[in-house]
Amino acid sequence: MIVHDPTFGPIVNFEDLRRDLHVVYDEVFPHFNLLGVVHRLSELGGDHPSVSIAGGASILAYSLIVAAGEDELAASLKDKIFTLGWTEEHCGSDLLSVRTEATPIAGDPSGRMFHIRGQKWLINNSFHGDYHVVVGKLDPEQSGPRALSLFLVPRSSTRNWNRLATHVLTNMVLTEFEIDGPGRLLGRPGQGLAIIQQMANASRYQCTFMGVRMVAHAIPATIEHLSSKRIFGDNPVQFSNVFRQLHDLVLQAAFYDFVMYRSVALNRSDFLAFYGTMLKSWLLLRINELLGQNLLVAGSKGFLRESIIGRVAIDSFVLPVFDGHYTINTLMTAKQARRYVEADTPVDLEERMDRLRRNLFHETHHGELHVDARDVRRPSFFDYADYVERLALPIHVPARALIDAARSVIDLIDERGLGNDLEHRYKVGDLVHWLESILAAAEMWKVTGVDAYLNLIVQQFNSTVNTLNDIVAQSDLDTPFMQPIRHLPIAQPADPRAYLLDLLDVRGRSGAGPYPASGTGVSASIGVRHERMAEPALASDR
Image 1: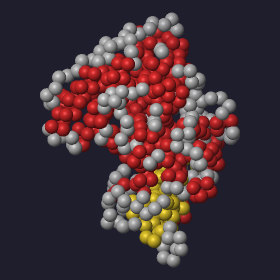
Image 2: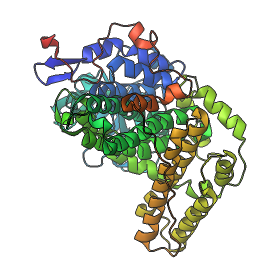
Image 3: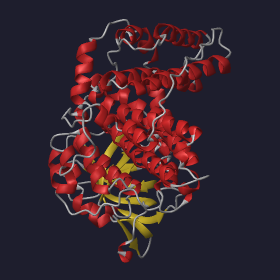
Image 4: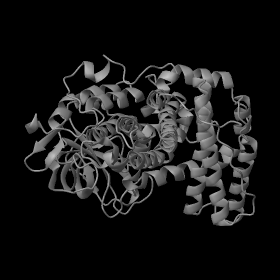
């Protein structure tokens, strides 16, 4: 999937991508299958980050066409590559400040053709894309929610492309370019932001899945490396300090895989945005941290070009950093904070666990792309402490004291008039994500029945306490600090390599089987040569 281009050097093979991407589009339209989208994309690109993100950008842009209700267009354009023509250098992700203008074309009987003028910046696929899904304004003086409209702009309406060199994902082609030509309105005038929000509810899962796949390749690579090299006559994995570090990395890697799929399994329409914002902010930042720690544990092996260990540690920063998405999503969660900590309605424990077991890791049609934004604004939160208590954990987790402390922190922030301060909104949103991570860890233990995962609950609880205590200390709030709880002893296996790899397999532990299922999906239907996260050979070298 990587070729040597005479102009750009080693880049994504956009011709192969154009030929095969229809397999993923088929999961978007006519019936949207969230896990089907991410699974087919993963198989199509062999989990190579540049290919996955280039393909992902095209899929998200295609999804906007579907979300806009342009079914006839969507059905006819499954052999095309698209770009997300949003970002402008002066405003980044502040879409309400874009300067791209759209003027109706006189004499157009449909009333849907416009002349588009503007500049876009840091756009993936744009040199090779067939169409650009562009954010623009009919009235450049407007800046409210209904100021934006979406347009489908052909490549012929763009010019003056300039590739922007990047430190990461160097096989992608990101450019700045100008638009000066006709484009077709998607949806209704002024509906652009609503369509984007509708697509974004589902897109957060796609982006996070790429990070989860990076972890799924990097952690086993470190285990294998430290189980095969020799220092002082023994494999480093046998050293107690190395094993302890690897053990903690493996627990977190298995947990992040579970968190991603748990969010899909439980994402009833009202929870779609809540889980998505947690994935796109909290989880992606945790993945960055994990891959960086993994590089440190692996040592010099991670510096080598053929090793994925170091490369994904760098490339993973693209996922939350693009335009500050992790901040935006955390601020969105902060709006739900008080409802989250004050909810007192009991949840049906058996129904929830049954739904989790039935849906975990399995592809189902939930129609996430077509959920009305009004249906996801107020998730049905439940009594947090009551739920933890009824999970009957074999360790003591003071959930009621924790939720009381979190409520106290939110009260004090509001009493001091800091509730609308961006710094404190971010901190509160982050705290809610950490609270939710405890529930996820507890449910992971409940679903798998693996006592080795109990330390995940301890880890998430202690990290939540640290986050809460930091808020108290940094803002000098008049409330007591909370205390962490003790870790359980970890196993001392005779075969550390086998133990760690088995612990990493949360899919197998939950009875869902390995990923991906052999003989299904894109690998069984098209002739794509996979470069499973290894440094790809160029076409001329094969």
